[in-house]
Structure formats: structure tokens, C-alpha cells
Length: 192
Length: 192
DNA sequence: GTCTATAAGGAGATAGAC
DNA sequence: GTCTATCTCCTTATAGAC
Image (cartoon, rainbow over all chains, first blue to last red; front, top):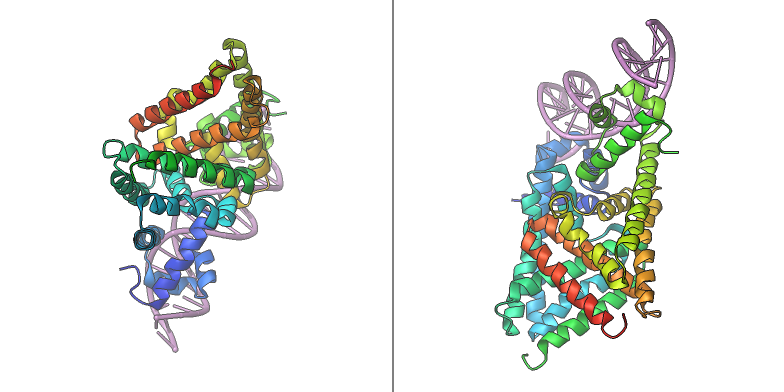
């Protein structure tokens, strides 16, 4: 649906980046068209409205997230190692996080303020992480608290991203990631 | 500076609310003028540019934050009780946080994406909380870690606000606040 | 200090030629 | 499938009457 052809895919890819780096509202059709290298007129052949592009961008992010979570499940053997993959995105993506925040959290926040129809779909990207993390915590033996633990990790990582953007402090990111690793390990002792 | 007269103060107050509830970029002069009940023309008599209103709004938030922190310092005796005042804003303001997020964090995030000149001033509101919290942690005897602990509490509360907005989950807020209270108390044992 | 009227430009969106 | 030209609406901002 999102990648009917090459030009459509390029548009969605450029919109994805621009929505992340400058925001949904602040990104104009002209900006996306310029990034792809097509005219504004041609643009409307592929997407009728700005909301249609947003839907395609969220589709793209859903797919990319599913692929990333599947990769982590394939690479790392134990649940603790898999959850560590999630926590360490903060380190891997620290440069873009300090500049633009978390793509999931900032889009969700912006759409909430705009009272946009797609805010529920944006939260589904969050839900993908939440459900994946909860499944991993269940594997660690935390059946009853799995959902709460998943939300806790998600919240900690969102908070780190928010402050990292405000203060541009890389040491802070590393400190918080280290603290999260200690916290996670304390949950695994004797249960892994 | 911000409240030269009554109309100016009304404009800044209305802009403060609108910037929070719908975002800086998405709020137009017409929106603010309509909220105050004045014409767009009159508007420019008080503020020449949109950035000038933003500066005044940040000034207003800085003042309001200083006043709130001073109140907490006056009300609550021990450092633990004061820090609890901060943590419990999440409960007190849960309705608006679930709808629009944290006013400090969401403005900071939006200005970062816009690469706006005022993003540093928006981060100063964060710094007000950080410095105040750090001072309280020092009183608890955590001299060396005071800054790190302050950033940690700030990050936890930012993360809770971000996910509360995405999932509109009040129970989640209460759970995380309870966890923060336990964490804080563990830092106070034998040192308060 | 407040208003109406209006300028100048950019936004989303459309029509139709090639 | 891509383009240019255009439409309409809304934005920030100004001019000038009262």
C-alpha cells in the first residue's frame, strides 16, 4: 500500500525523515517535493492529502519497527539480552535523539496536541514496543508484572530522550542507560 | 516586561495556554486574538512578532515555576517532602498531562525540531527544576550525585508524561509515581 | 489603545497540457 | 507519470481611521 512504486516509496521515506526532524505540522508539501526532487503537482498524483502521507509514514514505521524487533529476537538469545537491545537504542541513536528526540514519542505528542485523527495509530507504534517488551518480561518469569515492567522501561527511555534533547548531554544518556542495565539485571537474577 | 498592562498580560496568558494545548507552530495570531477577545490589528500594538509572544510566554513560565518551587520550599519541611511535591505534579496535573503532555517537555521538543532560537530559553525552565531538585538532593546528603539524581527524577517524570499522553492510562501514572516514591524514600533512609 | 482594511506570501489542493 | 499554472484559504504583518 505504501510502496506502490518507487516514487511513492521515495516520498514516504523523505516525509518520514522530515516529519521526524522538523515535525509534521512544520513540514510542507513543497519541502517533501523538494527533498524527493519532484514538482508539487506530481506529488498529488501519489498522495491526495497530507494525512494520507502521514498514514503511509506510520505504516512505514510500523513495518520498520516490526522488522527491528524480529531482528533482536533472532540475534540475541536470552530475554535479558533482547531487552538490552531496546535499552541501547538510546546509545546507538544518541546523535539524532539529542537533535530531534525519539521519533515515536515526538510524533505521538505532536498529534495529541493537534487532536489529529491519526494519534491512535501513532500510539500503535508505541504499543508494538510495549507488547514486545511485555512478552520478553514474561519469558523472564514476570508474568503478572510484565505489562507494567514494559511500560516502565518504555517510560524511562522516553524520559531520557526528552531530557537528552533539551540538554544535549551525552554523559546523561550513558548514565541512565547504565542504570537501566543494572535495574534490568536485578530482575533477571535467578530467573533467567 | 511581559505584563506592561492588562491586555498584554491577557495575551501572554492566552498564548501560554494555546501553545501548551495545541502547540506553538499550530497556534495562530488569530487564535490568540479570539481567545483574548481583541482584533488581530490591536494584537500587533502589543507584540510585534510571534517570537516576541513566545519569549513572553517563556518569561511567564519561568516566573510561575520559580513561584511554585518557592511555595514547595515554604510548605514542606524536609527535603524528601519537597521532592515528593515535584513527583506528585504528575498526579495533580494528570488530566492535562494525558491530553497535552508536559508543558515544559513538549515545548522544548517542538522548538528543537523547529531549530528555533528560543529552544535554549525553553530548556532553562527545565534547568530551574533540575537545579532546585539538585539542591534538595544535596540537603539529603547526596552531594556528589545530586545533579545526576535531579536529572534522573526529571527524566522519569518526563517519560511518565510522554506515555500517559500516548496511552491515556491513569493507572500507569499512579503506578510510576508510587515507584518513584519508593525509590526516593530508599535514598532518604538514615540520611534525612 | 482599539478597530477595519489590506497587503504579501505560503499553505494545501486542483486542472489540464504533455 | 510528470509538469506548469492556478485556485482558495489562511498565515504573518502593516497602514491608517477613530
